[in-house]
Image 1 (cartoon, rainbow, N blue to C red):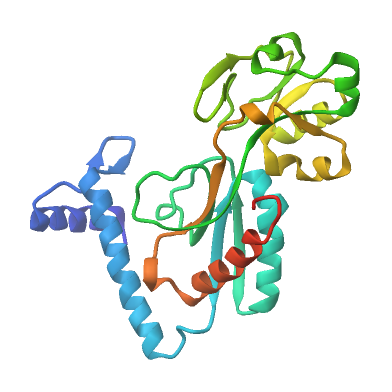
Image 2 (spheres, helix red, strand yellow; image 1 turned 180 degrees about the vertical axis):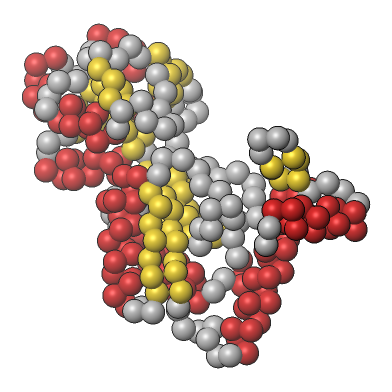
Length: 271
């Protein structure tokens, strides 16, 4: 359809509904709050219709189509990609798409079927299943501790080399404690654009860094890194599998969630 035709149809729809669905400027067109809600409601109605047609056709129980999964970059590479490849081997009629980025992805806007999210979830219409938890940990190499000593309290960090990541969700205000909370402002000597780089610097013995516990699971197992100040850690962060379709989820979504819940809950790094 041509843009003028779409404009006329949207204007007619706005007249029928009695509210503006789009905010138009010379440079952009954006959904209003009412428009976003209307869009989401229509998507659910169309999904219900598609589900009814699939059920009538007998295809509801067979996973087919493209399955799009999102999570953070390192978690996706380390844990979700192995899940997806194993799942795709089980269901040859499904095509997988992994979107591994360090930002919260809008599931409806970006066509996401399943998200695996770390952290406390805001109230939303998404269906969530908890599969584990991770901690924010401070780590260094045995060689570093032998040379510079081990910080015994959060305040001792001021006398140590700090390596900080400038990726998403990082801060120079390091919070500690569950009941008795405190905050320490760190002054890093080295900034890295990724967590992987910060972990590499810490593993080399150059300094200390703060990451999520799963991100250094291989180095902890080999003894290349060890964590400190465990008694001062914040409350652990939950891991959830979320999806927007509720009980009307398609076969590909339901089967992937069932498969992933079992695998992630059995992972010792999260439970």
